[in-house]
Length: 290
Image (cartoon, rainbow, N blue to C red; front, side, top):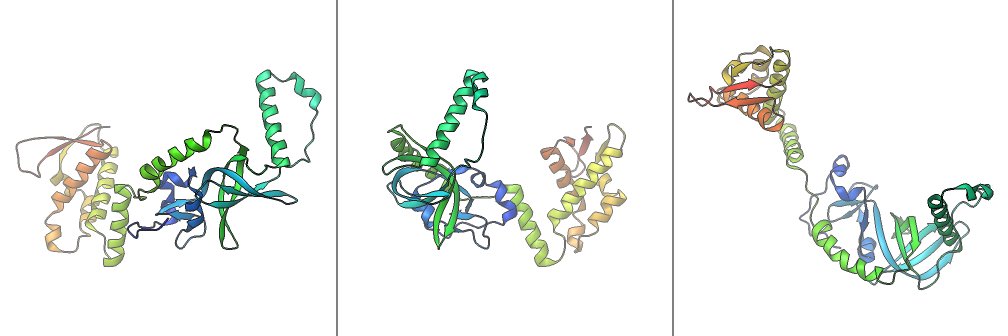
């Protein structure tokens, strides 16, 4: 996986907007091996500009190394080989097996399945086993590996073919598309960057504050009120916000700014609605809806 340079990396606070952060991403092993830490962070890896924590692989065991507390498997999916650490289950638990006979058949079957998985995890897999592994990507001695959170042997011989048919579609439809922020979030970040550069509030920020002030006014006004943008400009709290504009040219457009704030309230949450009239452009009537 090579970064084409066209993707923008995002701050950690924005990662939650990317769906792939919280799921087990089905990927080729060769791409997992090439993952590098997300720029300036050590909590996630980057594929393109997607932050990735967890992966899902399906492959064949080609090497087994048993330790006291875990098995280290080398898994091959045809594109590469990666080490996977699978911890042995805690066998120190004891239970009264005589009570199992009183369980409903469905729960008893589920219990047997769990015990079978634990037994398999204890005895380990052998060379040639097809296994399904989900886990977190870690770096050990400068090489990526997987710490398994789930692993199981797969007995269906067609599962590997199904995975290889599925992966190209996932890459095309999901992973290879850049992680782009929603329009509103991007607009907010651009506005903050502009304000940091100029040291003054942007026009967009003032329009937002006007919208908040109008909403607050409507909450304390009588049940239904009709008003114009010009009338809103004369309210003390809104006039104080509009006065933050720097140039005379901007001050002449106060009615336009209030109109834009009212339009946003109408489009985004229905706080107000417009009643069109054949008068001057800025003398439109807005009817409050409570």
